[in-house]
Length: 78
Image (cartoon, rainbow, N blue to C red; front, side, top):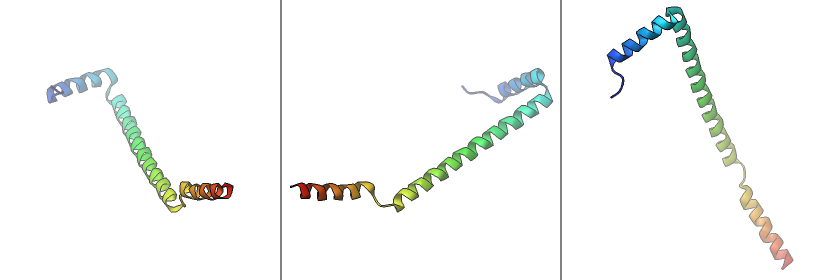
C-alpha cells in the first residue's frame, strides 16, 4: 500500500517540471543541511545529557545529607 517505484518516478517528474533542475538541487542541498544540523544537535544534546548524569553521580547525594541534618535536629529538640 506504500509508494511504489512508478509512483515515485511520477512524483519526481512533476517536481522537476514545477521547480526545475537547478531549484531542485538547491532544495535537496538545503534539506540535507537541515538533516545534518538536526543529527548534530541531537548528538550534542545526548552528550550534554550524559555529561550532566556523570556530574550528578560524582557529587554527594543532597537528600542523604539533608536527612542526617533532620535527624540531628530532631534529636536536639527532643
